[in-house]
Image: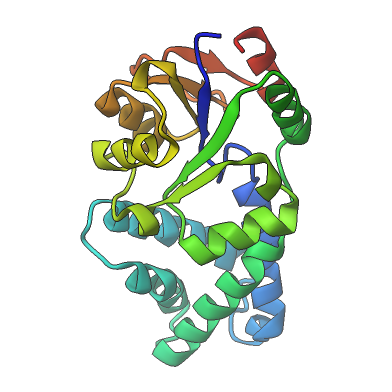
Length: 231
């Protein structure tokens, strides 16, 4: 086999972050009785949350804010859009969100089938994720994915973030994998594909949403089953 070590991203690649986040935010909306304070309803709240979460994740990824700031300020900014300026409420929402989110179990179609296929063929499976250590492990355990992976490298444990080369170097060191026998698989063009390019590692762009790009991953797939054509 050309590759021996497969490094998967988790969120948006295997674990369906968008579906799980939406149901968690519905739980948040009900638990804190936000319908009484946000007449526009859940969809408006959800839409604004997605907007602010993306901005603040980019700022976190580039080192402009801390993980703790990210966890509550995405809620804070969302509440401000509805003229609710309560920092304590924002922090309570953020904490509840992170408590419930990892218990959700929705994964992408064919996730377990492809992981079983790859394990049976003898590949060593690992994760490289920018998610928080505790949160990502709870996702893995709740969804039944944990047993598939030999090593789980998070941004917190490696003290780096994709697309920085250092997190990939850490992953290779941790797994004792050689660069030429390693493959990065992920959905995020910047974090996963540009990150792999920065590390000079081959990559698979898991393009669930048919996104256009000028980057040149080694392979592109549109459904996880297509990995059977590559590996």
